Image (cartoon, rainbow, N blue to C red):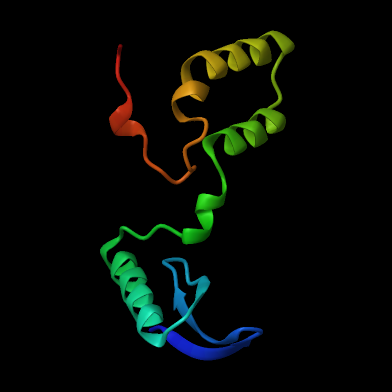
Amino acid sequence: MATFREVKRTKGRSVEARVYGPAGERISRTFQTKEAAKQWARKMEVDRDEGTFRDPRANKYTVSDVARSWFQSIDVEATTRVDYDSLWRTHVLSKWGTDNSTQSFRPRLSNG
């Protein structure tokens, strides 16, 4: 169940909406009006209940950001790293490098 609270800002007051994600994590967002906060909270709760929830905080990272972190974490031979880097630059970076990491790109895969 969503909760709402009034927040004092330098330019007046806002309303903070808080909801819980599928794993029980609290997610909050601030709005100009209580009605806007309620609409956002309702959508988040419906998405959570229907299994289509995507954490709005997750959109901060691109596919390139995630890949860069993964490349730094793997322990492989230098030649394998060179091969991975070449495959990444040739086949992935130009198509999905700037996409948000939470976007699904499976339907866009092709053999061509």
